[in-house]
Image (cartoon, rainbow, N blue to C red; front, side):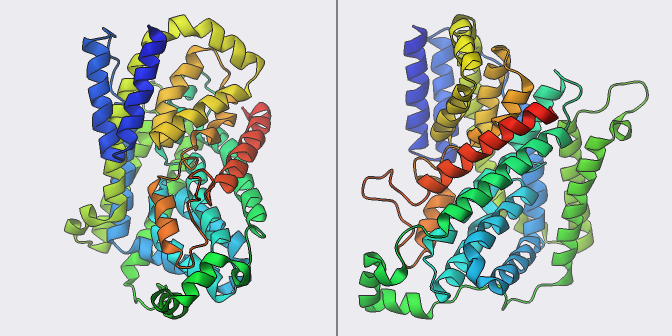
Length: 440
């Protein structure tokens, strides 16, 4: 019966994924009802902590966007790209990596993708090379961001088990691991695919007058827009918020009140993000009505609803089934540690969210008695949703490439993001696993 119920879980996740973020959340809610009232599983608690972290981070980042901070970051990124046009396949992924690292979400990079494609095309470089790599890098960086929901959830769960685990110790593993993966996938991308002169799809589009005009005469740039000084001030305040979070994490005395235990970092990050969001709003005098209109706010709210349903339904099943599964799965994973990475990857392919994957699978790993070092080292495997090319950033990247070189292949799985994604995740897991044995 447990296996049939697990199949039901997968079917619900698959059905919800056909509708995207909010659809995935509410369809999972339907699955939760079936689990509780038909399969008679005791419901677990909803993922309140993860949702509140997402809401706090998204609120601050959305105020940053409304204040013009994201456009300021975009202009800085574009200047870097245009000053190194021949190295766009290396620089582009590093730019999107840094943007995600700072913001805790990969949804803020859509505006940079057309610029990366434009720089590549005007320098005779196949746009697929930097664009696909940049899309993958933007998601790979999530487990390296100090304010991402996935990292904070890992911190909240593991620091309670081992006092030596801190935000800094986790980042000392995930930053080098994911950055190493980003560099390796970028190096692979340098020579991938045919040159533009030999690419049949690009040459076909050049024969079409509409495509030819779009390819030859469209220039994507953000440099022609003059931003107020408040945009730069917003970015500076946001950077100060990140630095403050790291400092507070490194010095537990700062967050210790009286004789009580130090305030948990999940609460600290929520307070910091809300507080600095308010500070940015006051200093820049941003129109608060613009905040819900931004890309970051909309994508963040969708993510929160998706995680609400996914994590609650999945946690209910795994808590119910774990006593029966524990012995066999534990023996397999302890003998072959990489199999837990495969489990993380597979779940991520289905749920399209690293935070939801962490919320679903970390309790499973802990229940099986896996070491914190192993769990932290394999964190990059929570990014597996490039495997099926239906994630918004990947679809947007395909649409932004006017040359047609970045594409979803004829056989669906032979798409532009597959090999860079596999290289990035596998190499990041290998590096992370080795580093975690030393650091954690």
